[in-house]
Length: 119
Image (cartoon, rainbow, N blue to C red; front, top):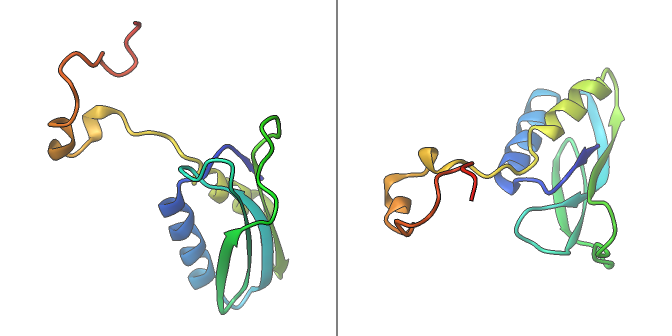
């Protein structure tokens, strides 16, 4: 379980690595996801050692509902804490401007306050 929207790229890399490294140990999985940039869209995910698929659920996240990502794995020798920690590394966190590519900096107005500075 991980609270907050997931970074789609990080999540895809996490799942691809997991399925590659633990292919013989995972029989299947399913879950519910909140993905950064998709507003109130709730995603459902399901898959097996052969691959995965995810798409919008029938019901969106409700405004007051806590956005919690949950995955359930079926397999052998899987460490719940390890899987939870891996999922939590996928939670979206914006990069500070110091890490932005130089081409992005041309789009930032010069009056934008420094990252983390009090306004």
